[in-house]
Amino acid sequence: MPWIQAGFYAVLPFLAAAGGVLSGGWLWDTLLKRTGSLNVARKLPIVAGLLGASTIILANYTASDRVLIAVLSFAFFSQGMTGLGWTVISDIAPKQMIGLTGGIFNLAANLAGVITPIAVGLIIGSTGSFVHALTYVGAAALFGAASYAFLLGDIEQIVLE
Image 1 (cartoon, rainbow, N blue to C red):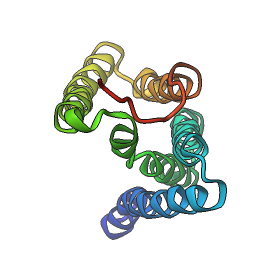
Image 2: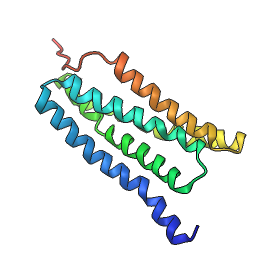
Image 3: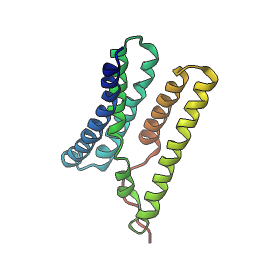
């Protein structure tokens, strides 16, 4: 593949992710206006986005560059839809603890941002393949979707007395 074409293809998933962030924000607002339910407006886009992000596993099963870019673009778009997860924190956290709760949320996200590249590097280093690394990332997305769907209770602000 020529360098220009490779560069064009390489940017597409990241453009899709940006579109996912914007679309996710629009969807969150639209669902809240239409349903009045924080549970629907917050959980549905996050769970759907994480399920879509898990399709990155399909990249293991294609030999076509165009199909690979399409899979990655869809997975990145879907992951972008989940980028507003911090709004759940502002919906749930007690008013007196918004800063601390947001800090803990960001700490967890940043730890994942540190651990994931290390885990992916170790997986690729030990197997010589991206197959298990992409499976790890897809499984993490599925775990996240299940957590939001089944572990997170109703989205309502906690009131401290």
